[in-house]
Amino acid sequence: MKIELVRQHLKDYLKHAENDQERHQRDHAERQERIEYYRSWSAERIRNMTEEDLYDYMSKLWAMLIWGNKKYKVKKLIEENGMPTLQEELAELIWGKAQIEGRWDRFRSKIKGMGPATISEILCHVHPNDCMLWNRRAYVGFRYLGVENLPRHDYQLTGKRYRGLSDKAKEIADEMRTLGIRDANLLTVDYFIWDELQFEENLSQIHKKTKVPAGGTEIERTDKVTSDFIHNEVCDKLSDIGLWLGFVSNREVKVADGSKVDTVWEATIGNMGRVIYVFEVQTKGSIDSLIINLLKALNNPAVQGVVAVSDASQIETIKKHAAGVSGLRDKLKCWDYKQVLQVHEALESVNEAINSLGLVPQGF
Image (cartoon, rainbow, N blue to C red; front, side, top):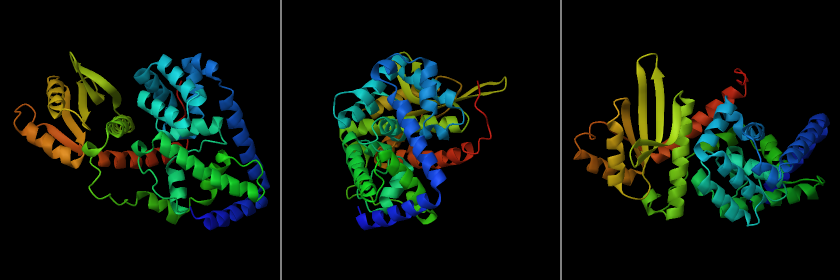
């Protein structure tokens, strides 16, 4: 990290705070209010949350700004994970005795529909001296400051890498305290990143393609843990994309006895019936199993399309397998998982911008 660049922008941050003390004090009060609220949720209190409590808890997060209907998003979290599992895993993530690396990886492996931006925001509010808030804006800021090997996609952000990023944020907090911001913590660092490092030229870099390492980044070549993270992230993002496009979107839907598909988009057209699109994400495992699941899905006449999502190499293999299956070859579509991640990022930006206008009030 370029410490001199950090110091330069911190001096600007202090000047702006001096020139607008009212806003600086308001920001400080907001940080304290957030910390006090989320710390008030002890492990026991989390384990006794009601569904309404969970909505109040989640709806205050900045990460929820991309959702116009926050109640619907929280309802989906409960449906896909179960309230008891959410309560237990949230309590363990925040208050567990294991190191943050293990708690982070455990939560991400067990809970669907909550990405690093949401998880890290909760951790930062409860443990602001140790855990940073990681999202697209933090990525932009850290990249500008010269931090290397940043995780571009959610599946790359393991617990170990999250701890390393938090350590980098601590270096910025140390510089803040040296310059006189005595109570600086990693939530203060987040405000600094938003206020000082989000100028236009810097923001444009978020869509700049990163170099592909030698040998490629095909899912099939990854270890099983990474492969599982990729699978879960892509499934979650397919579900989000469907919701943003106006579909009813669900994870792990049963299409026949003993057979589930990863994600389904569904829409009802007047009184004409349903239109369904089925997605299967292939990371590791049997391609024949994927073919069978999609064939079973096509037995439903409402299914208008089936889509296999994988990396470029496996997509070619899937196409070859499907070519010999008469009921599938003409209906199968394929989608590179990297494009799914790019589409999600674009739609996320659009929804965040539109929802920030507050055009649509929250429903009951």
